[in-house]
Amino acid sequence: MVLRQLYETSVRPGIALAPRGPSLMEAHLARVRQEFGALPARRRPNFDQERHRNPFGDVRLLVGPEDVDAHTILLGTTIGLPELLSADHLREHGTRVDAVIAHHTTNMGKPRAAR
Image (tube, rainbow, N blue to C red; front, side):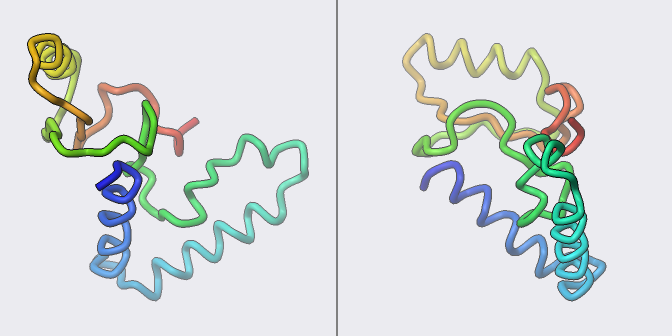
């Protein structure tokens, strides 16, 4: 599965199972589309396009290509520099690591939604 597919496969059920309910999540997405439509043309290029499909500001693909075949993933709750260095070390020594997925991205810089 490519990384983009994995990402989308996590967002869709998240919308369906959100505590606020799918109808409120869809209403939120509709408001985002209206917000985008009301923006002047000069500000549209800076708008986080992912907000049209994903209501979760903390769920994003942050770095790297989205079309990577994700066979081996380093997954953690709070991923920081030590874990990224571990992934790099594993790769240098022949272990396949296609992606690093973090639940808390505060150590990864700003997500696209916060830019």
